[in-house]
Image (cartoon, rainbow, N blue to C red):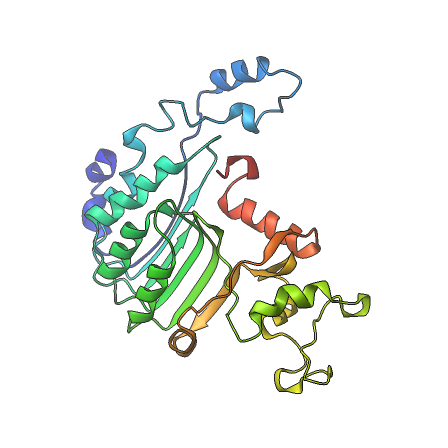
Length: 297
């Protein structure tokens, strides 16, 4: 930061309106240290660039307090931002909960009165800090929250606040987690509680669709003959099949949909995710955006 100030960046930053920042957790930059670690690997180890070369949660360099406030200090130089895309990529082996402090520093020090477009990706935070951020930026028009973890609190209060943001016109949610696990973004409807029963009664030729039936056991045309929440299979990029239902991990909302549904969401379907092309796509996309699977804890 002193180098930026010396280069007169401070004055120039006041005129920045749009910025996209992608940063990672602390990495090992000492090549000799990496080589030494590789040499100590046993038969369970891997090559350069895998677990053996990553810092761990117990490494003092990985969790040093100086790792967290840098983004906040940078954004503080940009009071006129209208668009912010903030991405945190995790390559810390073990728990990376300490990196929730990155967002806490932003919430404690930053208010961007002109912010209209915001994307948060790979961010760890708590319910209170996210509510504080949204409350300080009620003028947001488009919001994306992807691959986000709540280390404390839960999402319902966040959803309630989103409904109160009068300027919010477009919202995209993807892969949200809290202490209860992965949040199912499927809409709750009058049939959703019956998904488990329908899933058990599927026949082979109905692998892709589950019929809703009337009193005589015939397809009910009122809903097109299918459970509404299972229509998400039509878009393989937004859902994965569980043993007894569908987990919707990605959804976009218009202003009208936010006000109509008010995030009355279905419960997470019972059972593990089932191997499928959709699951492979989801796993690969999540790793590319959030970090290697063995780092996500």
